Length: 216
Image 1 (spheres, rainbow, N blue to C red):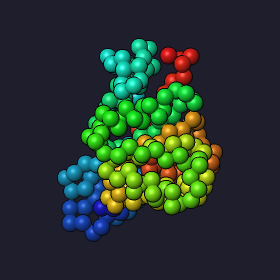
Image 2 (tube, one colour; image 1 turned 135 degrees about the horizontal axis):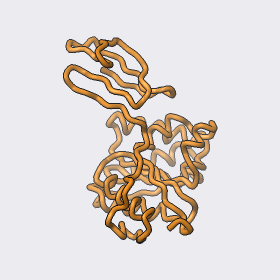
Image 3 (tube, rainbow, N blue to C red; image 1 turned 45 degrees about the vertical axis):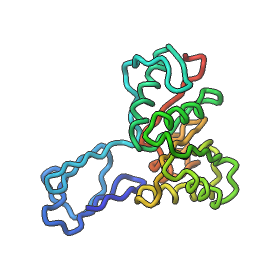
């Protein structure tokens, strides 16, 4: 079966398979599913979930993660989430006000990941001049981590180039772990039409909010 990301959901298309593609008990040739949803390909169950995963409800035991330090419940929940995310390859969005430690958190995730020995590259999307700068950033971060800094301030032509590169990553053509940082709520910007929807879906496998000092 083929799964494709659309603005309104996930398009599922059966590729004339022998065992069939099912939603519930109905065998389908094609339809659009809105997560959360489940389909079955042969005897394999596939669960489609919303892009952002909530942070753990209970604070973890860690009082630090990389260079981040904190004892408040908000920070301990953050550390528990970052620890789990670091072990995976999923894209990550770090949101928080200026000075909350987004760049430090991105470095800590990289250092705790299987890619720790590989390049750690920061690409400032707000100051990138053209698609060539984006392509260079992805090449430089090959096998490592690429921080897409200030994703909420990316000009339209830069956002388009980033979306194209992330699409190539999902097709297995680029080996890079992306981490985006934003001072504002990226989902709200998507809903307001200020950010490409496909870019949001490429990036927001997991969202982590870094609380300001007044909440720590």
